[in-house]
Length: 285
Length: 248
Image 1 (cartoon, rainbow over the protein chains, first blue to last red):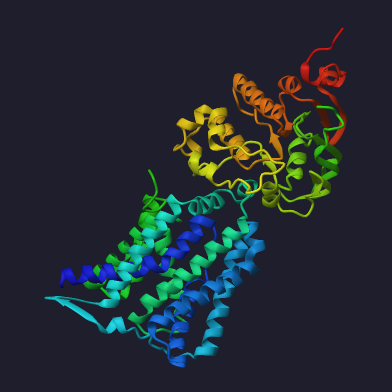
Image 2: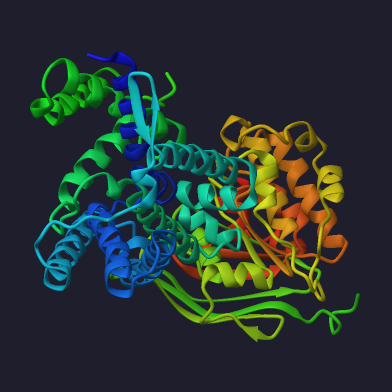
């Protein structure tokens, strides 16, 4: 085994996991909301970018922003529909409703885009970089850099700006926030739009790695959930750490043991972490 | 100031609040004159908090509110709580009044003072730190790390930053040491003397009587007495139930 290559693979995989999870992390941490349609939103964004490229012949660099924008708008609509449940913090109903949205998206996408696997082709994927034994693509570099930049930016916004304080206040106590003159409903919509747009960006960068299927949403949501929970629900830094941790684990476990059992092993790891650190990796002891 | 010049800053009529089938407040009228301080006392569970929350259009539970609320003559009835707060009807709720995860500065910075403070009472940060010097040293502390008194000071400060036309205070003294209670309430009185209008709900009848212009007594959701503080001081219902002595 080429250890250096596996570490690179781990970093690349991990940045993808973290990037796809970031929206959900903010949603859970900042709004105490769940969205089990997260994986299907990823799928939808990937297919929207693909369709824009295939049907309208636009460039990859245009197709990804289109998908980000479209998902952001979808976020406004979805949150508008769910707002009464969100304001009541009715989490059980929200789980079911978002799960329902996920299946509707999946069915709708299969109807529109067909059931065949497709490829979202990024010109960056073709640019490979070699250093002796190790090999990676420009797409990997962009994904890694994009993830780090997005996490850094998000951390700054959440901890150093009034907007971040606004989001954290609504997360802590939406009722009290109203007395501060804060329109909690609007903050929820903003957070949800961020989630949708961020997962679309994740899809735009990560989906070119492998064939895309309209049924891939559920697998995405499961691994993302591992990252979010492992990181310590809602912790921006924690989910970055968890994303890279899971990526590294997947790469090394796949190389050293067997790729067939990676998901099972990842969940075993999750169980161990949760039993020993119930608050996740980022939890303060 | 003459009585004629004291127009109502806040006028609430026929306020009733129900929780499911239970009537918590039953047809109460409240008038807060501009530049006046009104106190409301009553036993635990009399409906004081429910009433003051209803004025702000706010509730933690599923409350149904009826009645009219007018702020400076403008109807507040269909406005959500955050809109009422922005218009200057600012409530400091009982108990948890600030965010524990945010620093003192962040808590205060959440408030955007109104651009047009006409008819309102804006407070600069300097004035806030002048009123509560201790907060200046606690700026970078998180809300959750403060003492009860400090937390209450931050809660009042953020309400003042919102430039209230009427300040609604729900038991600001709860959980504070007696000396702090008096200090906080006396600070409120000084602000009233500078023109702020305050509606105060309190358990501490003795301190309230010394500071307010008018006192309301609430029992089982109904207003049973109201009058100038000087006369209410001798009201047998107040004497018996709250001051623990009957004048002989």
